[in-house]
Image 1 (cartoon, rainbow, N blue to C red):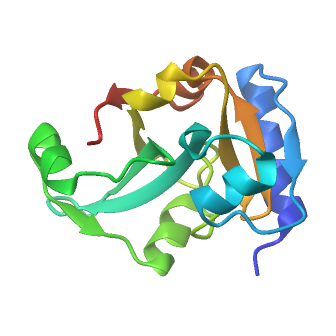
Image 2: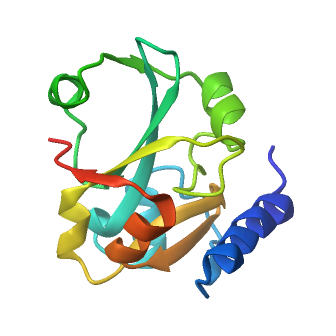
Length: 158
C-alpha cells in the first residue's frame, strides 16, 4: 500500500510551489470511486474530479483525463479530438507514469509530466474535489484552480 504521509506531502509541496493554500482532507473510508468520495464528503457525485489515465496508442505516453464524477468518458470522441487512439492503462503503467495508485491519482504532482485534459462539465460548480495522492485523501478546489494548477486543456469528454 502506498504511503499516505509521503503522498500527502508531495501534493502539499506542489500546492506551495504553485502558491495555493488548499488543504488536504483525510477521509475515514476509502474514496477509490467517485461515488465513495461523494458519499464521504456529502457532495454531489458530479463535483468529484476523477482522474483517469490512458495510454496514447501512437506514442505510449500517458494522458490524464480529469472528469466530472458522473460523466463516462467517450473514448471514441476523445480519440477524434486528439487524433490518436486511447489505450487502457493498467495499474503498473498508472503508478509508473504518475507515481500514484489507481483510486488516488491526483490531477497534479506526478512523477513525470502528464498531458492533462479537463472535463468542461466541472466548470458548472463553484467547488470540486480531487484525489490527493491516496484513496483516503482529497482536496477541494475551484475548476479554475484545477485548470491553472495542471495547465490542462478544457474539453468535452462525452
